[in-house]
Structure formats: structure tokens, C-alpha cells
Image 1: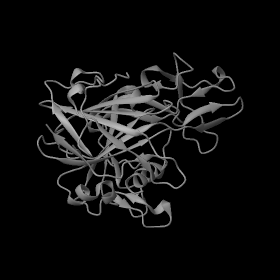
Image 2: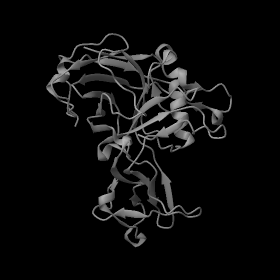
Image 3: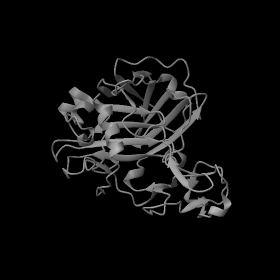
Image 4: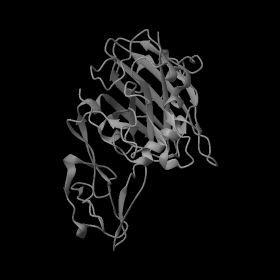
Length: 332
């Protein structure tokens, strides 16, 4: 499927660069431990998005320690990964401690006179090489780093060649999880030397997705929409939106920063069920082993595949946590 190049913000790009370089269903206790740095996917009859499915008891647990690449920042949580597959799909279960579920990405707050727009979200990301990639297999995400400049605004993440591409799964607690998907995206080469964000591309979107809830005014912007059913909700679904009416707000009220709907197209290849409860996230992601899209990695049963992860707590820039080790997906 044709790739649609959608350049994201430099802040998000820096998040991945630093990462590379620098329902709460409980899993049955019988789940075995994994080999170091190896996520072993077990064969099952049929995969689901159920975090408490019985087959998780047979899937080895890989505990991935995460650290921060930024100075003077604390270390990150341990992310526990498990994987299973059937004749068509792979499913990955991720669990990590997080004291809050952050849903305030770019939320509008009305003080009675004017709006401010602040807030971040939690996220979990995976990166997969598309095709054979010896550099990534030996270096992991470091192979995508271009951060030698002392100016962080000149850092970028991607490949050195138009022939080398990466597939990314970018789950976001505020923008994608409420409608059940993970943003399917990727990295290519630096197509525009003046834009450090140009290697980051989002897979083709036919319809839907998350749309910034703003009128776009350069001075004193305001939301375009608000909820027609629950003015206190932090989530605004496209099906619930009504035209923004400032008269309905009181000082201290908030309006969600995005209008959400589940997209169609390659961007929605990774269906997701994420639940925050009891101080932790449990996120289950499922995707076809082979989507048939050229912008996605093909996960071939019996072929080991290197990958990397990053996780963030209420962050949208470089302040997030990563594993510095090369992780490998294997099959059982």
C-alpha cells in the first residue's frame, strides 16, 4: 500500500532518537522466564486481545529493564513482554508499572478568560527492521541514531539509505488506545535535510485517526469541538463531538485536545487493547504476521527478528525510557 508521508513533530522525533541512543488481566504465575533479551512467541490455536487468555501461562516472560538516556533523570520501569501466534497473527502482551494513566495530551484548560493547552500521555513503541538488516541486528536502535551534533535540534532518527526502512508501532494512551489501535508508522532516510522529522512517516490512512481539536488560529486559538454527552470526559470521540460553545464552560473546565476515531488503512494494522489499573498498564497488541503492505515488517515464523522498545510516563519528548540491549523475537 502506498506510503503517505506525514511528518510528525520534532519533539516526538527526539523522543525516539534519545530512546535509541542514550483490563488489567493478570498473567498466570506459571508463565516461564525467557532467555535473556529474547521474546519467545508460543504457538496457539487462536490469538485474542484478552490480557488474561489462558495461553499466556505458557508464554515465557521477558523482563526488559529500561533506563533513560537523559542526564539527571531516573531510570524507567521494567517492561514484561510475552508473545503468541497462530496461523495468521502475532500478539504481544506488555505490562509495566505506571502510577497514573495519562490522558491529557494537549488538553485545553479554560480559566474563565483564556485557554491554555498543556499535557502529555503515556506511550509504548516497538521498532522492527523491514527485511534483513545486519546493523540493526547487532546494534539495535542505535543503528538508527544520528545524534553526533551538540545541538539536539539537529538530531534525527532513521536510515542512511533509501533502501533501508523500519516499521514502528506507536501506542499512545490518549490518542490511540481509547479507540483500540496502535499507530502504525515507520522511519526512512532523511529526505529533507532541513527537517529532522522527515524520516518519520505514518502509514497510509484511508479515514479516521486522531485530529487536533483546534481552530488553528495563530492568536488566541480555541477548540473546534466539545463533547455533546460528557463535558468532564478527557476523551472526545468523533461520534460524540458537537460544535464548541464557550458559554457552556466554567473556570477550570477542560476540553480534550484531539478528536478520535478508529482509522482505516495501513495505519490501523495493529489492533490494541490497553487497560490501566492498580498502578500498571497492560497493553495487548495484535497484527497479521504479513500485512501485505510494503511499509510493514514481515514476521516470519521460525525466523528470528530483532526489535527494540521504548516506554514513556506522561511524556512526549525525549524524557522516556528504553532498553539499551538488542531484543530478539523467536518462535516456539
